[in-house]
Image (cartoon, rainbow, N blue to C red):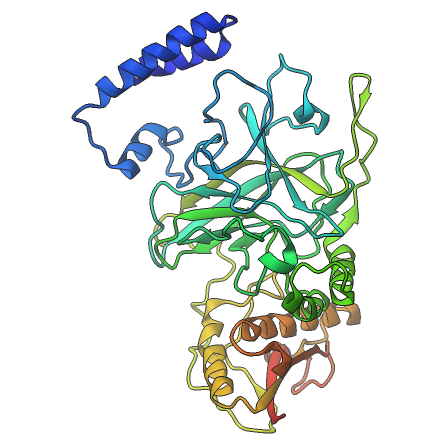
Length: 447
């Protein structure tokens, strides 16, 4: 019976006459309710049964954006929360573009942006960030069922830089959450939308700018806390120390382009988040040149969340099984104290592992009870990298810890700095010594 409905949809879509389209839609409208009488009405079960992708265990509903509600138009549409692209919305006031492509249609703005999907006929165009106002867009989808606690999932999606975009960025990721994030009111700008709590679950590597106009996969492994139902894709919090400092200064004023704090923040975004697109202005469609887009504009396709087999941790970079067991944090005034279990993901100098929460939360409790104090965060590395790289790593690690704390105590009480490979506490000639030198310290003083 569903094959009959599917056949009607296909015929209606490709029919050249509106009378035939109307007739087939009428049949679907009458027939579909009759076929569903007495059947299971549980939404999750229905979605899993009838819209699973080739019986694979993909948790994302409509992962390739192929299902949409307008059978009569192949023109680009704004992705709103009206259900145009089934299962996907724009969670803020931005309006990403739902793009439909086939070999027959060669006109319209989706082609001017080179919106050819990776697979199928649909993809979504999105402004990751527009420099100046630092306007950002996200898309948000729903999973067919909640994720299970302590289970590992491979999260992936594909991106492609538009050759009409003036800029490329490195900060694109996906966040898995229990509830919808953003509320569509006043949340269109990085300065208002982002905070240290909004860190991507999976993201593109730091400083690896996505400059390809061919499709690139962004993927990683996510350990679920349990109950995650939504996937949001776009730009998220960046622990770059210069961006963090500028954000802390500008955030209290919100979107205030007339203030010097906001101007400085914008400069940091442009400096660390964006590079010029070498392809801009070079692509043509027929005899028509593309129009430049003064932002970092990308196409997204094929979002996926798939459970890994039990016990399969071969691709996990944040396995904490060999990490030290966090215990009671020794806190003393006016003394430099090394964290025992504040650790970071491999290949991500700024992203804290969940094992770090134990010691950091103890520190937060102490600082909340002693509000007449300040804290200084210092990060160090070994000497296995160049001075420039060591400095960058230590800067990001210090900023990562400061970001965690700033969401819980007054940011004015937090000072942080990276020192690269300076001040070693052990020999760099042995692995054990290098591990000790790769550390984060804190010091609590009176105001």
